[in-house]
Length: 293
Picture 1 (cartoon, rainbow, N blue to C red):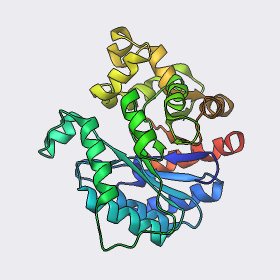
Picture 2: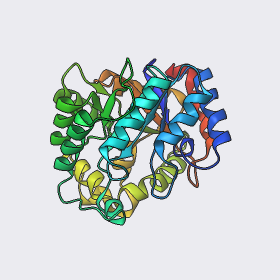
Picture 3: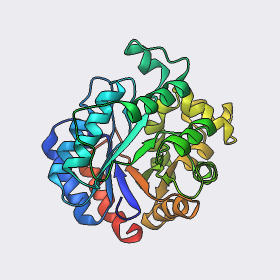
């Protein structure tokens, strides 16, 4: 990935494609080094979204953040990754994750052993034979790793990790476990808003879904947060740890702190009152470009 700052936004991988194409091109022109597309139940396949954005840009890396291992088998993922790696050399990044119990059950799968499932999936990807030629530069493979054992798997059987919904302390822990030669690309929610009440209200809107998912809550518990932090939409302490808000310099300082703690690249996610909005995100990204880039 070029540079050290990228952009994660739900609307880059959902909704009409033309606004996403235009946004990706502008993000690239601003100087950000990557754009990240997610996978949501019933939404557009992340590899399709990645192809759309890769074709709309010239330099920026496009990453899946993340593609669920339960949405397609390992052979399909290997073929998709190699196809994009061949078509756009050095620009596609494959992010893989085990998703969440409630979402996996909706797909009719058993979530009882997610670590073992990921290990088996990676092994299958490495051994499967497809009709797609392997690209000269295989796409980097990152795992949506939060806890130590998944981070260890990212170190042993992938190129690194893409942790999501994590505070700064997690980056230092992840770097220690991954070692010096694996990629570490945390996501960081950001909001250019100096008023504490407004910023925390928007942050709690964003956090509400994630605080219902055990994977995220259990990870935060290991980092020192407790029931009081998870009550009533999240304590101020939790909000401030997960969302970088304030003026442009304050937001940039948090992002740079991830880099200082061991991140190779940080994917920032601009938040908007009422849910993801590309136009507002681009406004924030323009304001952040000078102190960040």
